[in-house]
Length: 280
Image 1 (cartoon, rainbow, N blue to C red):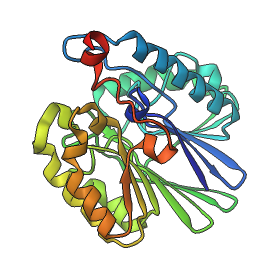
Image 2: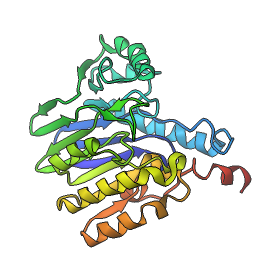
Image 3: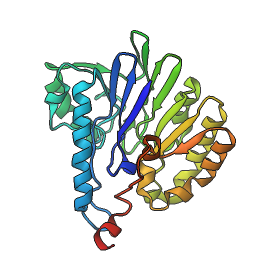
């Protein structure tokens, strides 16, 4: 199995887009990217806009070659409704647009999905399992988007092929809640791409549960790489927030790293550095 993270905060934009190649199947998860509209009272810097277009071009290119596409929820950094033709002839697995969903996401889904019915095969994925040859896609039941349900629900996806398991958590906020962590503990993935806690808004309050559950996963024994990114990388002090988890992972023979580090490229959390982009 090959996992390629296409866009996320350590790569300069809001996103959790990644491409998974499992056997003959190419699976694109959350094909969207966006920028924070305001940060420190400032709009996106031109460098952020440049990187956004670069990442979106890479996502579009991946969409063209993908066989299967997953949309874990209906926030615009996880899907783009503006170019529905990109989904033509794909099998599309989506969060249920009617059940366990908040009002804003229901509206977005109702505006987006009907236009796909004639060009793609759309499957409601919540809590289901799909098999394509030797490749399995397992979807969690809907879990809260972060520490409460105010922002709706998301579904997690686990891809299994050749005995290797990869988990994309979607927007769980680093697993602050026990119910979010159950899926990962049960299926024991080898590699996780997780969005970290939103410390840039909530500070240390969201760290307690998140770090507890990340530590549980590391102690489970199978997890070798925990990629933590997305919301966490909007915090200028993200490294210090998770330093103890990084150290614990080393003791367990595992790695905690950003998506950029996983991909072997420079870490560039542009939104967190927006003030420096403007003023140096």
